[in-house]
Length: 249
Image (tube, rainbow, N blue to C red):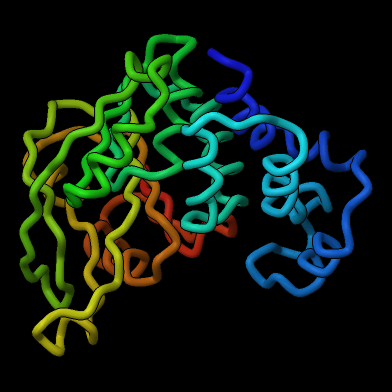
């Protein structure tokens, strides 16, 4: 693993200690006061992490393409959630991860599971994004990650407009990360009234796939969808995510 690739994950997972000893910039101080995405009782280091990454990228290292890509898309997923996701992976040590939607989280999880031989399979629906993501994915992480271009279909699940990825699920998955679906407008007014949600965790469990642990992203549409659809499982709100954590019994 090259130093350039490692620096992103090292910074994310040790941010509380690293940044607690840093003198923050005026911009970071302002962000910690007014950014509502960060709970007030968190350490100052975490509240400053997002801005610190950008400062690090500009001033402390000659970045390779993979790291530039991660920084470019860092705004797509809350840095706070990346830190929390890393803690989940370190605690659970999943051998097989299924992820829906390739992003910075793919890089992070591939890095974290590599030392013990874990595998992440990520499904991406956009051909353009799939090509771009594969072109910059670090070679040293490709033995622990598989990015699949996967078609999707849209269907209704009760009152929810669901996105279903077309894939064959194994009998057992240790960890599922549901990243999406994006709230998009379509030709039907209902596509906006009922934001599209990712319904694959329900489909997998209905077909008999055992999922040990799963988390969704921060979208409220997914929160309501899974709360309604998986009420027989252990479902609880999480202060770290505007979403839910699902633990199958």
